[in-house]
Amino acid sequence: STPASGALADQALHVLQHIFGYPAFRGRQGEIVSHVAGGGDALVLMPTGGGKSLCYQIPALLRHGVGIVISPLIALMQDQVETLTQAGVKAAYLNSTLDFSTVQQIERQLFTGELDMLYIAPERLMTDRSWSLLDRLEETGKLALFAIDEAHCVSQWGHDFRPEYLQLSALHERYPAVPRIALTATADHATRDEMIARLGLGEARVFVSSFDRPNIRYTVVEKDTPKRQLLAFLSGRRKEYGVEAGIIYCLSRKKVEETAEWLSGEGFAALPYHAGLGTEVRAANQRRFLREDGLIMVATIAFGMGIDKPDVRFVAHLDLPKSLEAYYQETGRAGRDGEPAEAWMTYGLQDVVLQRSRIDDSTAPEEQKRLEAQKLNALLAYCETPRCRRVVLLDYFGEASQPCGNCDVCLDPPTLWDGTDAARKLLSAAYRTGQRFGATHLIDVVRGKANPKIKEYGHDQLPTFGVGKDLDEAVWKSVARQLVAGGYLRAELAEHGALKLTEAARPVLKGERTVEMRRATVRAKSSSSGSGS
Ligand code: ADP
Ligand code: ZN
Image 1 (cartoon, rainbow, N blue to C red):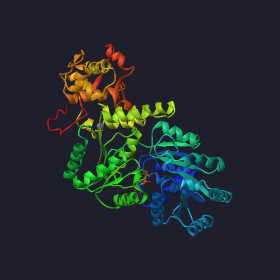
Image 2 (cartoon, helix red, strand yellow):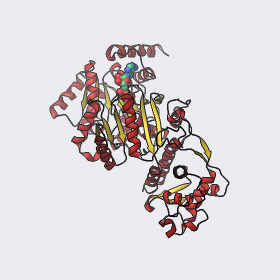
Image 3 (spheres, helix red, strand yellow):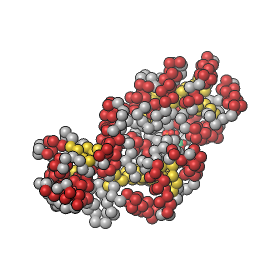
Image 4 (cartoon, rainbow, N blue to C red):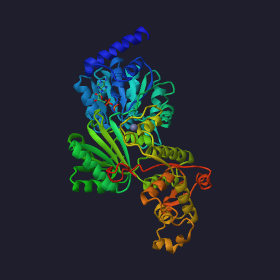
């Protein structure tokens, strides 16, 4: 590298050590800091807890003028400014919580060189008042850089979408000479491309860190009696590690409330969090979770972005997340301090049915539906995988790795079996009953249970009736789930989960294609027998 960049690197290290008090840069931090301090644009993909903040804070200090940090999270802004101020950095924020005289004071400081860094909410940036501030700063050469935090908020298909983020491309058009650094912990390629396109980062250098979180143990259990399973999980951890902080994600607000209440009754300190709770209750619960020890937050995905609590020991999913990157984000809130932590999820047929129908029944454009279906497939493949979960997860982010020894598959490998025959029986039962029935009924048919419903429809007269007596009900459930997950059967939510054959089912029925299945993800009860089936 050139002498100039060497000098920059030295200065950067000096700031790191003397202002932030850390001996060395982590991962690619040093490279990123030098690149941005030298005037380059950057897109930084780094997992939560990886140390993104320093990547723009140090360049902002090294460059002349004020670094403008766009952040969607008001609470996080305040934390960051507080921490910076304690370190002796001149930082402030502008957001809706400030009174007018404070705003005026901060604006004055911008021009008197009393500020190195200004945090600002995107909606505030988009006001005439802010633009004219920036114009004046630029005219006097006082714009050090723009940092766009949580840059994935520009993705219209992600659940953190912020419309104001779409307008951030204006920064580049208006101030082409000011370097920009966009940062996110979201790593999938679709979002990456979207960020580059929408933020005008075509020329930016992309820095991708490893997304592995080796201290997190991944476990997926087959949903059987979810409450009991959750309780067993929580009690097991408590017995081994004592009272711990954790997050439990549920899909619906109702389930959040029920679960929090039920857990409280079971002796766990649990709080609810969802968007329907009212700002004050939400803020109060979040504050308690952050400040007190050993609380469990039961939440919808409304809870999480920017939650900086280092000692969250587990993240549990009672329902399937929307995608593998959502899962990665949500589980990534565990173990930010680097100590062992656990990501635990229950997963069942109903989850697959629900998520599939959510996509099928949506009125979104075909293109988006296709993308969402792909994302769901990747997630289902993760749930059903006979391979190391970490390998599958990292592979999704384009990162090759070796089996980890720290996930349920590595620790207790499932066996594979040839499920072709079972698949044919269940597919044929769906076909012969007119594709109007759900999994429970079809399983009763193949298992030969002559219950009243079966008799009413005359399904005890079908050739498939009772052909699957050799396998027990749990196995059949897992067969049904794997057939839906694998796209052989499609569930119609509008018809109470009626299972319909897809094109992919045809070659299986005709004996042209085999279907490999994993024997029970489940250690359904406990793993006392060790076989797990
Ligand atoms: P992110 O925004 O990527 O989630 P942060 O910037 O909040 O991560 O950093 C996570 C933690 O790591 C913080 O406590 C931060 O002080 C610490 N950290 C960051 N960089 C370093 C470093 N080079 N050496 C030691 N600690 C670091
Ligand atoms: Zn593994």
